[in-house]
Amino acid sequence: MDCRVKPGNDEVKSERPSRRASVFLMQDFPVVPPIVIKDTPKPRRLTSLSQARAYVDEAMRLGRPEPWRELWHRLKSVANEEDAIEAFGDMRELLAEEDLLLPSA
Picture 1 (cartoon, rainbow, N blue to C red):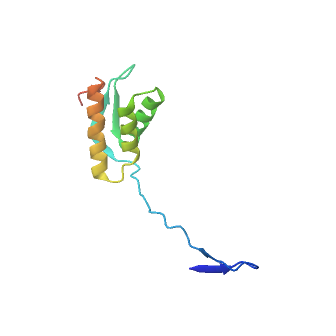
Picture 2: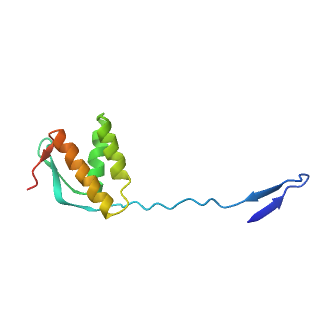
Picture 3: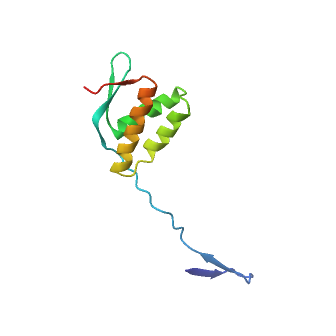
């Protein structure tokens, strides 16, 4: 602990380095089987976490409803393999509800 006394001041000021929790987010992870989405001019295949994030980010710019925002946050906060698998499952469910999911080929 570093304690310093300012000249002309009787109070002691304590300066501590901030202790922030380190959060490690997963940068990329494969999607197996790939998520195939209805898109024009041809279906779009998502084969990685980064591609899924980019797709949802693009969809959010078009003004998608709240479930898309929740999925976006979920994909951005993936920290391990289990989180990634669960996020991909959520994405498949949302795409199926919106009739955007095609069978994986």
